[in-house]
Image (cartoon, rainbow, N blue to C red; front, side):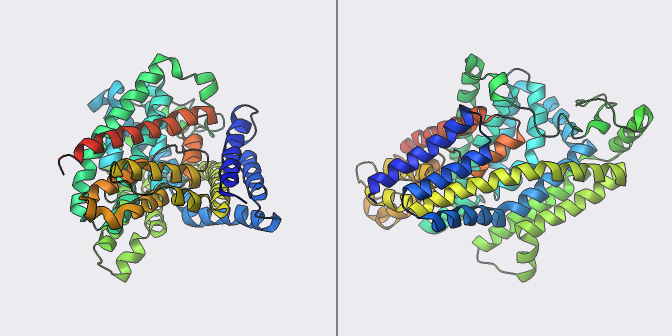
Length: 471
């Protein structure tokens, strides 16, 4: 099959998935599988190879992030049940105020909580974002969802020790200290400007709660934390008290108040620090079997989950924590299925060979090399749905000639990272995680994630170009 036919059929498959979900209200899982099946057959993979791509894509993404998502959701459910999320909301509100929350949270995530493993940070911080959205009021869900998407995606490719940033630095021979410095200098204005632009659009009528939001799983059936929130005077209430009645609720709240906030979050913070330590030591070529084991994402999150469970039991007792874990399992099922079928479509696109086709059409241009690497990364990301892969591939095209044309490799790394952010869409498991965890419809997620992160991508390259004049 010709390259043109592959490109056209891939575009048709992606558009069809979006239309089925947005226009005809098909379930996203069904739509993604149908789109994957169409693409595989249309480009000539054959029946068996198409089925293999769908199954392998699902299995590969589950092997990569399945346990991470499960552990993260469970940890978040326990923190929500203990009231830790609500108390942190109130603390942040007291410090920054409601109107500044999208900026405060997005800049914190992009600079201080670098997305070493984006899915982990997302599932842990999503309950906080949902609670903050209620405090903000009008367009709260839209503003917090866009802020989350922009900061999470920018952090992973622009800020060390994000996995994308580490990979780009290694590929182009950029010292980690230099990558960290330039990345922070870029990511702060990029995130702030992109969040401001999206907030402007939402406040000018580009968000319709009736069509762009949906009930978050768990809100209608045993809301997360409902039996610990009601009697707390300084935190939100998601609903009436639990079965324990007023006396039990007051007792739980009093117990919760005695547990310092830092203690409740300590296991989660420790798990993220373990992951960060492992990534940094690995990048520095320092190896230790013990550190490698405890800093691996699955083990680090397991340690965090066990620690959070013990702290939760100390704070509330065994029964409320068991209920929280049960609710977390109920949440994670939908999230895992959506994430997996997103991997199926991405795998089918990869099997169709679109990434290789696009790579042949683009060559380095001495006139505008940074724009070229941005365009290549953007095109590859639209095709294969992987931020990290598209960034590395595009940077690799210009890496050999960087010394000849006089470009600092760190600028190529940043341009590749910026381009890889363009058009995060239905092939990305992050898209579906944000849709599920933040209570958005698919239509709403296309606005907050696809458009929001694309705005950040464009802002970033517009900031990188003048930087190239001085470095």
